[in-house]
Length: 156
Image (cartoon, helix red, strand yellow):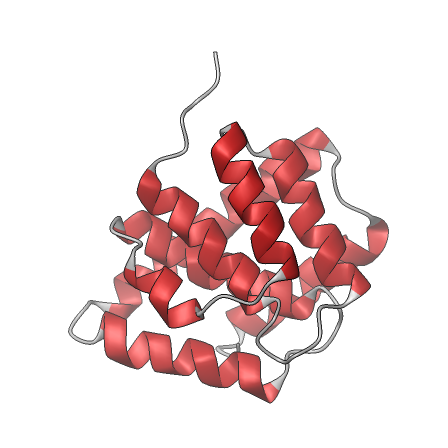
């Protein structure tokens, strides 16, 4: 039985897809990242159609992020957004600026230590799930390792 993607989780994915457009260039690696998730996450037909359009047309990351209502989805957004940004081996300054603004405006007053732990825990769960399903290329995994090393060192 498939698990329904909640509205909050759907907007998490819309915000992530919007991040691919943040630097004005959607790379082949970013397209591959989005396509893999479209194929392996159990989106409804309507959700999938919207996300396919989001791959082609830039959406506002802050607008999409504002519609993420669950804290766990917000935490996972930051993980996936960074993973997407790193999938082409380059974390653009514009991508970093967007994430920094979202952190300041939407996460002010939250326990950042708890959020960091949640992001790291989510990252490990997601990485294991992806690894078990075998849906990612070797290059993808090299970039995941770079991201995790940077995250562990307190870098984006």
